[in-house]
Amino acid sequence: MNNLFQNFKRILDKYPIIVNSVVYGSLCVGAEFSQQTITKKLLDDPPKPYDWNTLGRYTIYGTTLAGPMLTVWYRFLDKKFVGTTTKVIVKKLLIDQFFFTPQLLLVFYVSMSVMERKPDIFEEFRQKIGNTFKTSCMFWLPAQSINFLLIPPAFRVTYVGTCSFAWVNILCWIKRQS
Image (cartoon, rainbow, N blue to C red; front, side):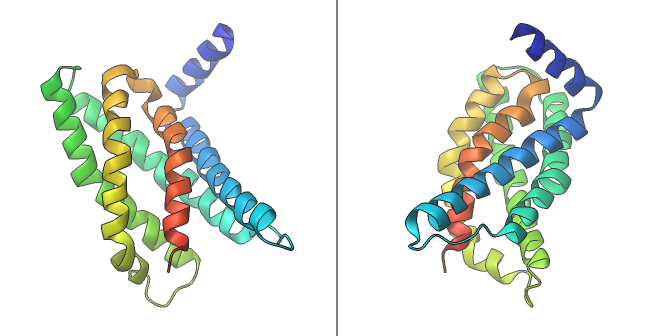
């Protein structure tokens, strides 16, 4: 197990954007897959087939947009705010939650709308940003406290990706709301 961890760390250090994009994208599509399994296979009677187009959109979002953005963002934050003092952690938390998160949510909703070929690519963002952002604060502020306090910088996106498995399940649920 230790050897596996060391190999992952070595590859992550050498190719951070690629590895983080694959890890984050996999967890993102995994969250949507679990949502569809629950809603289409367990709750629907008769069961419905998986929506492969939606799974593809989450794959594209996670691997080509969110994964690289998160990698670059955390690299920037860790260089700009070094350390684990309370003051540094609070700065990182506030900047991450109130500066970066709204942008990431905009990218999420707009990119999904573009891939869904919606006529107004900002409509869903306008309708859902308030509820999504409030929910995001409740979920991510505690999660990011752990991230900035305990997780080594090289593993930030992997940690966020793991937390995102739960978060994307929440996002998928919010996105499905009318």
